[in-house]
Image (tube, rainbow, N blue to C red):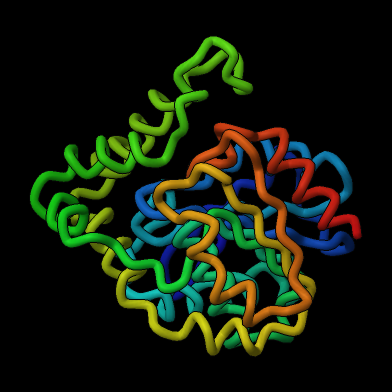
Amino acid sequence: MLLTVHDHIAFCYTGGKQFNPGQATVVFLHGAQNDHSVWALQTRYIAHHGFNVLAVDLPGHGRSKGAALTTVEQMADWLIALLDAAGGQKAMLVGHSMGSLIALETSARAPEKVSKLALIGTAYPMKVSDTLLNAARDEEQTAIDMVNIWSHTSIAHKPSCPGPGFYVMGGSQRLMQRISKINPDKVFYTDFSACNAYANGEQAAQAVSCPTLFVLGKKDMMTPPKAAATLRTAIPHSKTTLIENCGHSLMAERGDAVLTALFDFIKS
């Protein structure tokens, strides 16, 4: 599905189903140097079980046009405009990593547009080390390798990986390399800088009144579960699902567990 947002084409994967204005909508937001494809399992299932799905490519990522946005606040404004372009109805927001910050900021800026929040692999503050920031700016392939290693547990290497039929780490690496090829303007550095600079997370969380779910990987080295403590405290009515044997790439490493947590939350 193509929408026009801020004078540029925005791509939204719909899970293989036509958008139905009469159904509830779930919007999926990817993380740094990613696109909609990280939600392949979850979006297709949910789209075929009674919900609209809009898995967006953020500007400068995947199939969406325009330059990558430089702050979480800009991304939230872009998302609000996208929701208006899609018909203006309330939507549940599901965000992974950087996408979780966008979802959170959007809920603070436009609470009337957000029915539920699901924050996956999140942290606040979402600080990025100087080593990784510098690599993203000067040696992008090195940054891709670092993130790929740190985002997966050892189970991703084993034949018993719960994602049979594909190589989890190889898929993650090729996606990040593809984003680099599509957009040579240092998207990784732009995304990491936006996460690093975001300073409104606690205030935004304190304003959240809608049902909220945290989905966290128990072995996540990029955003460890303890790094979500500030947000979880600020949203006392939230619930948390901790996934065993799972790192930061939750949707690929433990796709079924993430889907179960999300679908139960969506239906509730």
